[in-house]
Image (cartoon, rainbow, N blue to C red; front, side):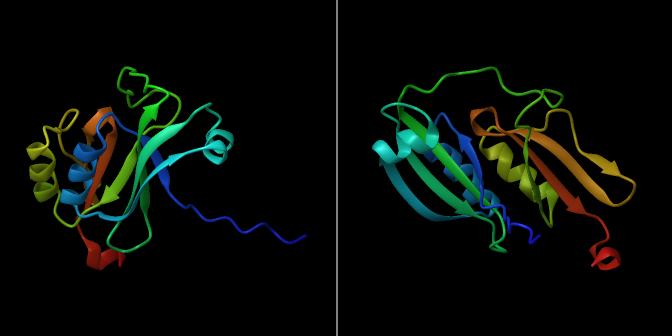
Length: 151
């Protein structure tokens, strides 16, 4: 039996402020590849919400392999929840490799986004941290310490 082809298209994240979240991720190096406002029967059916109406933006990593779809609900009203904790079941985080974690953290700090605790080193392979991004999104940043060894 032939296996179905599957490919990750994007990670979707509902946000409180679309423009602020776009600014955060574009400052980190992602590019906006599309924007739209969606509503109508097709989106009600796909998303499972009546009278669904949202502003959306698709962002892409520089390598073209990773995409985030950000959406800000116009209707129904967005529901505020407590920010996710690292050990909670469900959607956990979005992770990015960066070539300079200190620069990435400086960019994040300009948006008021700070590490949950600090920067750790994993077995002399990665420096990594979790930060609390816009709308409470947990973002993992990782810098490979010896890229010539693994690459």
